[in-house]
Amino acid sequence: MNFEEKVTAVSPKYHGAIIDVENQTVALPDGRIAHRDVVHHANAVAMLAITEDGKAIFEEQWRAPIGKTTLEVPAGKLDDRDADNAKEAAIRELNEETRYVATEIHKIAGFYTSVGFTDEYMTLYMVTGLKPVADALPQDADENIVLHEYTLAEAKQLLADGKLDDQKTVMAVYYWQLFDAGLVTFED
Image (tube, rainbow, N blue to C red; front, top):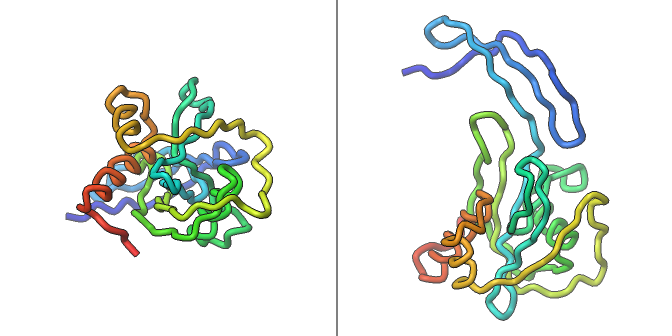
């Protein structure tokens, strides 16, 4: 069956600092016309950062779209400094947000964060062998982050208690659990 929709018109709706929004007019495979709201967002990275004592680093921060604080694994957008290199972005974001550099960085998975409305693609890494950075990069001016470290058992309990509700973080904890049990390995 052919599912492909043909874009016949694009109407820009919003141009912002981190997103662009457009309305697309599309022709469905059966000839009907429909409209799609699309959010364009830079690709992103996230890191399951495991310390030497076996704890993962989580960030507590306010998230305006949901009106509350979250606990998340470190993450950030690719930008001009990364030249579309997700691994370089992960190294940079780890420095900016946690003040660590990793001696080991392995790709876990790549995925679209919400295919129903955005083209954002995220690459999730596991980073280990963490050492304090020699040269700390500046944090984004609007970031307000508090770092926490949790063992796998503690992270699983946070998940069971509904305190981890960020998709990339949930995925990272489930991967960590499988990795710890020897049931998965790295993609690269």
